[in-house]
Length: 64
Image 1 (cartoon, one colour):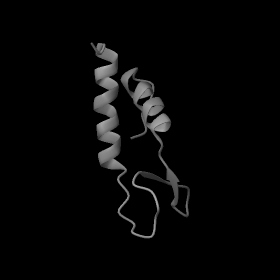
Image 2: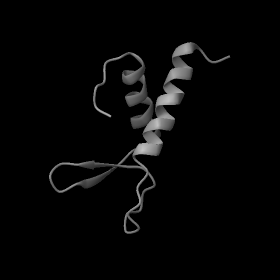
Image 3: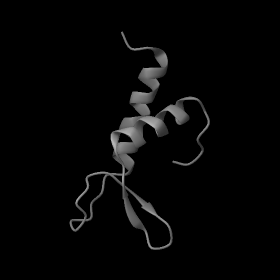
């Protein structure tokens, strides 16, 4: 049975996946974070999403 924290993280992961779904057909990744002034695509892995979601669930992350 998932804990309350795990359920919150799962909800945040879905939100992140929806927000950072890459629509650039030239990009080889499905999920990207546009980084820096050149908007370089940074591939968001499961580990990235889980870490980011954990910070969001704890209220430690204000970037979204």
